[in-house]
Image (cartoon, rainbow over the protein chains, first blue to last red):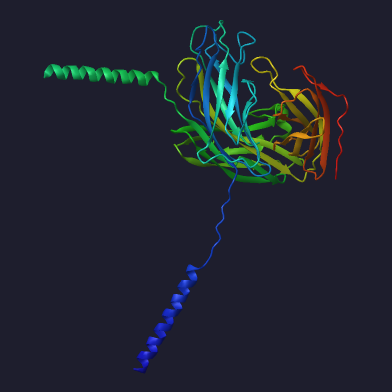
Length: 179
Length: 297
């Protein structure tokens, strides 16, 4: 009988001890850290943009390219930009050209619309085949929305009567960076 | 009954044919996009040292995307626009492009997919102290479809900039010039406004990023506009222009452009310029007085 009581007491003590140990585990703490880096993304919403002349005779060809950007820059030294360049000139030959237009005053120009936190280019600017030109800039501590922010480029291309009748296509590359 | 079936079949074929034609003539409006982290990498390294890390490249395209990687030179042009190119001969002496390698170079990303791109920098053993810069660029191939009629195909490139600092190069730079320039003419050939231009000279072996403000003061000395300096690098051995398009419409009168900046040396450099805007829309008359510069400890 004595042995039985002793064993029961020991069992109770063990149970209490175990219960205490479990309570200690549940109230334990741990440190979770996450490194939040500066990052960015850029999307051209449509892979192509059509330029159309819809006004009077030889009115300028116009069109729009829509973009979505995502940005998070560092608080002090962060910066960023979206730029564009005509990486392949209009082809085939005989039509408009950014690099060697048939008339010197022909140009592919654009204006920018950029939602905050980006700052739009001060346009109109002339697109080039030799260098990138600005679309948007971002300062330090810039944060886009989770769904991204919108930007767009409105194009104007001279409608020169010297262009041969045909269909002409160029390639424009948009670059996002944080130099 | 059989006549009705025949008519229905003809109608169905016509609708199917029309849909086919619409589908063939209307180009697919594919979305192209890329994401990258980190966008800028700064490393302190010793000559002969090798370092490897990774960049997380993600797809924002609405389908499978083919991406090409390339090592690039870069600089900031006189319009304060970064220029990333495969080869900028004038940057050869300060570029880390030739020591940078990327793996893989040809990438295929699924919709919503991502990939860790490994970069490695292997520095030469006889590299002089100084800062060196280069970039890793990732480009989508242009959209496969062609626009309906005259138009453009789009491609997207995302770039990570690398700054490699060897040793402890000192910063040698100064505020060189302040000026006011008309912005490019608009459609009606009228000036769109004015921009202040601040020029820094970097005569040393280390890039720097000026921090500070540019202020526009009216004739009474009241600040009418303040703009922070953008965080642009002044790369080594060059002059770099910083542009500040003014939001304030400058009526005829006298103004002062004033700037106070720290280029990373711990001392404030200050400069100012008096300008007189004439009533005509032509270029403003700029006072010939030299730019006073008062470095302050």
